[in-house]
Image (cartoon, rainbow, N blue to C red; front, top):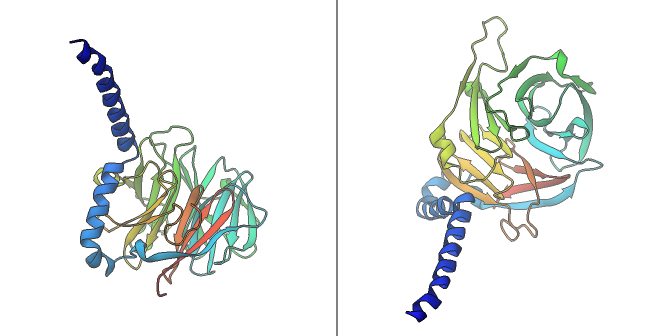
Length: 304
């Protein structure tokens, strides 16, 4: 009897350790991620033929500093200018980059509290997301633009589940279906589908719809969302998570089909991406990432 009493505390400690591991696995979505790895291995060949298939990408430019810039957030590709755009919030600016990560110019932002994302939607037209206010602002940018004042442009405030700086973190635009996809960072992770903004045809009345897809969002085995990107060629969505160190490719039904890990040793990375904040793809299938404070990455598919 005494021997049993002496052993029992170890069982309690072992049980607590197992509970801690289970809670950590749940928090970091390790079970879902492990199950996806099995599916990726089983169905990889059929998915590879009709997707971006992120597993085939390798880094070409790694951790290149972007000039005298800090606090970068979000990324979008402009097919007309063949350049990339991002935003910073300290100070609030839009920055334009070359496809090699060189700084081309900066544009001051006025009337924006916490700009966290920018998205190309049409020639010269972009949407900027203000995180804390959950506000979307349609702006125009041309060669002469040096300042953008939010008061001058069309705006939409959603105010869905406001919780400080865990609001809008990423934007993506599906031009064929006029869908603006908006990522809520966390608590909980959500992707909203906004139809009717930006208002493209001024001759027609405004018809605004905001949709959600709980099943798709539940499949996102990530702790947060930092950025989104829509690939028109495949109709697939890329979702970037800083805390999970991962880019996930989702098919048209919202199912994960491939991933790109941002950990050291993966996809040719010598070091892990420290704080991934933006992802974008171009019309040639190249993949671009930026990371705080001002690091630029270019990934290309093997053989391309």
